[in-house]
Length: 247
Figure (cartoon, rainbow, N blue to C red):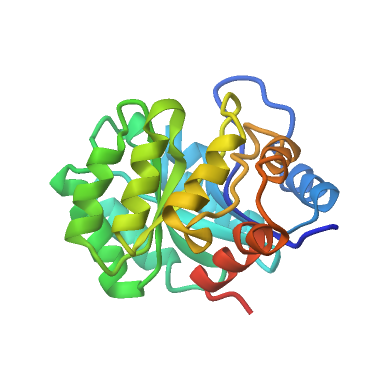
């Protein structure tokens, strides 16, 4: 059976190392090849170097292309600029949330400056956040964010990574606003089944980490995890469709 798919964790643009698929046409080709209906992108330029130009580059690339959704990248080191970026993009069509990567900002997710920006985005636009969680960007930090912002949907990118994923699954069970996105290049498929068993089928989303990982790899991981057809439909499509309030 071929499932409908929404990818909640993807990237657009060049990185500081060679990458095969960095154009919007490359991404569209990967989407078509893997049956992805919508793809939510953040700018690699905004994550790594230039917040303002990266978000603008993404906005230009996805304008008028309904299959692409955008995250506004925000950075607690530049709070006023980040608020301006939130105001500039979250109110326009196509942008579905904010993205924060503490591995590049050097600030833990639980830093008050991060929480302040997330609160600003939620109170003004009521859209979710995708947070990178792996290694030092731990699940314990997300718990503070989720507790202080209990209404804001929070997607845990990578579901905590190699070792923190059980804690991530437990947090998603405890906190109604926490969702799990389990992509990774070195992670066993069994953990997806276990995450669904712990947190429930409505708390897990499909994300590929495209363009860093081919969506086929992560899709294969999920299809091999032992989920039922109904659970797969939830994880691959319906949870994200409802979370982003897509037509």
